[in-house]
Image (cartoon, rainbow, N blue to C red; front, top):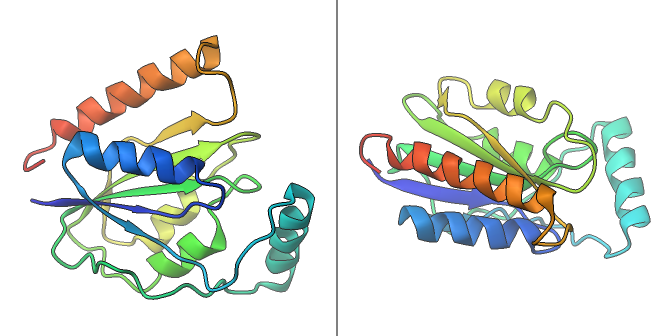
Length: 166
């Protein structure tokens, strides 16, 4: 059973973790690309996210570079924005037949984590889920927080490697 890492990244933090994950697992890699570019200013980005949520707007994305039809294991990597997955991720997930697939979530965050998994599970109806992993970004690599996150990440990678077919 082959695997693919599907990621969304605004600043590049999640991209780095997704690339590392794909390399460690020997997985293919594809990006969820938004049709709307985001500002670099965190305050402006937050205003856009809040405005979208209040208006119930859908975030359009470009068609993926790789279709996931032939993959049984999907690793979803995304930043946590305001305690949830970005709307771009939700848009991407909504058009996929998830039956018979195993999904692992890798989330990056710098603030509150919140309940980012529930909405994803609802969109991936029919999939089974492995343990998720959340890693903090923006803290020094030698900090206790970074070391704890790396240990948890390495254990998570080990769990995925033990899944049959990986």
